[in-house]
Image 1 (cartoon, rainbow, N blue to C red):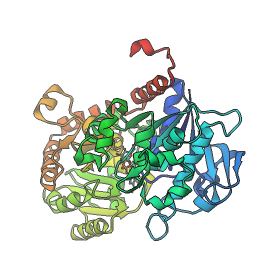
Image 2 (cartoon, protein in one colour):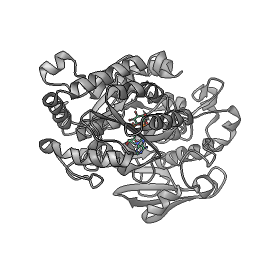
Image 3 (cartoon, protein in one colour):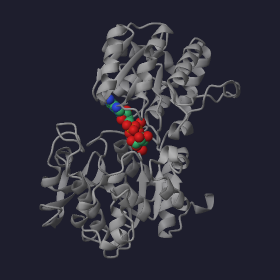
Image 4 (tube, protein in one colour):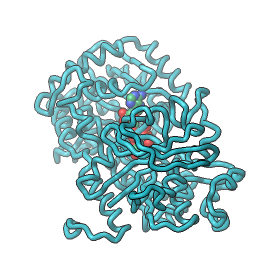
Length: 486
Ligand code: ADP
Ligand code: GLC
């Protein structure tokens, strides 16, 4: 099966969050399941700069306001098609934001062009390459199913994956004339969203199948609390909505081989983590001690519950805990964390920024990884935590609820607990969960078992890759050799 994955970011070329990890891992995960996946992405400088053997496979005289080319090549083991359109993408840094920290004003055009290129590829723009499925990630790729549904016909089938419904690509009507989208898309209400144009709305309405990144989030999305205005549409599409859990790249995230660690280790040699813990404390200026070291690696936003975290810090320190935070985001949260670090020298450390290697060291050295999100489509940090014996403490939402088993009495008795899960997502409940973690940590035998169990849980792509492959096969009416096992 030939699948074109369409995404605005792909690890390791360009990343702002989990979407990049997933888009980067899917092709490798799907290869053993009979799927040949190429990835279409914008030709940002970081992408063009890493493309090996880039060959021009198509030229477009006018690609949404300027000339463009499609380059086929490889980078970091991925088969890529880069949309080289300097007027849209030749801008350094963050893929969505300008130097002022605000969305580029022409983002509607930048990502309409990406979706249009995907549609053209589906129509056979490049000789010898005709993907059977366009798999579109988030709003940046979400116009693709609308072009497929309303412009000149093509046989390509479309899958729309929601990684985060809070980013919807909502613009004014005035852009419609420049979208190159058949007028019927407007007439039939496929792109209208609260009086403007909704890219994600269009994708959700027009795609042949819709997926999101955990079963629980697939349920939550159909409710007013989590659907962010799109719940009605998702209810109406419930028959084609699937929740398929993300996995992680278990080769890149392997405590036994991770070059970013001060000391590698395995489930059998967990005491060696102390070396990483010491290195971590050094980096964050913390005193190493007998009480648990809590950690956060995150975008600093309300989604991630970081305001609740800030409110909990004094309590956490009072219980003897230490905390290190790596992240950047909303200014008030950065200020709150900076102030907490100043208030609790040696106990609380905050490094503002983005640092992939340090994120690894944190998972390999801290005792608890905190993910107190208000909503979390899947979440990858808790999966890295499980894999690294860094016990996850998470709120009971979305993919967090699907991947961590709370250490309640029943789960401890049954020997299945892998972390601490709390609800509702409030400051009080978070602080209570921190207290539970401190108490559990004081029972080293029990803690060690919980770490080991987490390290054994399957966080790989295996099961989910099979689900994506089965979904593609269903859409294409392809019979697969392992169908009888399903
Ligand atoms: P989201 O995509 O909503 O931000 P995920 O948990 O799915 O959340 O993915 C976040 C990814 O970004 C993980 O790979 C995490 O390690 C990484 N990450 C987030 N913030 C930072 C940071 N400040 N430095 C390094 N890595 C980070
Ligand atoms: C989004 C979500 C996150 C998910 C990631 C990858 O950024 O916020 O929960 O893990 O996409 O699917």
